[in-house]
Amino acid sequence: MRNLRRIFRPLKDPRASNAQHNLLDILVIALAATLAGAKTCTEFEFFGKGREKLLRRFLELRCGIPSHDTFSNVFRALDPKGLEAVLRKFGKGFGVKGVVSIDGKALRGAFTRGRQATPLHMVNVWATGTRMALAQRKAPHRNEIAGALEVLALLDLDGALVTADALHCRPDTAQAIRDRKGHYVLAIKSNRGRLFKAAKALLDAARKPARASQRRTSAHGRVERRQAIVTPAPQLAKQYGFPAIAAVGRIDSWRAHSGKPAKHKVRYFLASRPLSAKKLLEVVRAHWGIENNLHWVLDTVFDEDACRSRKDHAPENLAAIRRIAINVLQTTPGPARISHKMLQARWDNDFLLSALAHMR
Image 1: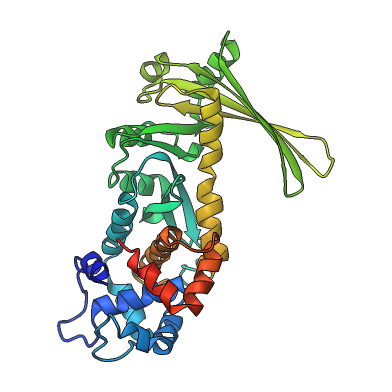
Image 2: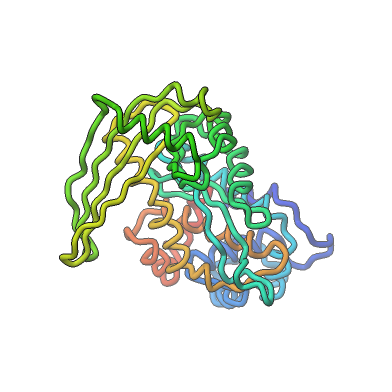
């Protein structure tokens, strides 16, 4: 387990020099417990006591298993930038290419008394190809745009195609992506005023735009089909002060539920590099991987929204541990589903050790 020591060594221990429990022991137990399905500091302690014999194979544990109060105090005091750096380094090791999605997610249980409507808000970065969390950042004062700009400044996006919803269709966000050597496909809505109208008019007037259709799909009681058109738009960047616009696209979708008439929806997009209509369909579809493969997993498998840790840095640090756990499970050979891998980590010591060995 030398990798674990190397990975967590740069983290600064926020406690006094006479602290009983080693910081590495606390972090590794928390991560191992999360891999096995533990969700709270109390469950971290319970896991540690149940697996103490196994943990002593590679951890010092000179004062035994830390109490739940020790776990809580450490995660409240630990600088979250340390664990965020571990998360980014892990994701970078697998390459940041293909579609990279940015989206916000509230930690619905992380609110102070009387402020249930304003829980802590995180900005997540997700690599669709590798199905790995690349980074996270707390949105300052729940400002998701500011959080996205902060997290983009930390990433190397060379070779990546960054997607985001219409909230992030802004010149500063587009420039931040280009500054990190990435390209973007950003949804645009009518709140962008003249730029939206110009993009819409350009597509409506295009004589021979690139076209592509997606075959009709049926799932979860609905039938859906999509088609896309794309046309070059190099003049828009200069006219409207929006960096690097190279093309605009439109996707029309028709969705019908249980034999009811299909509903037609139209969405528009700005792209910083020319791309085919087929590619636009693929990229926009891939963007939803952050909802289906990250946010859904966090809520249904890790019960993130139910976590009531809310004081100091605890919500951010525990969120980082959960995302590191997703990456570890994703890279560990075994069952296809994350939930099944967690069960195996809970029951099989060899699988748990193998998963921890995939930390890098």
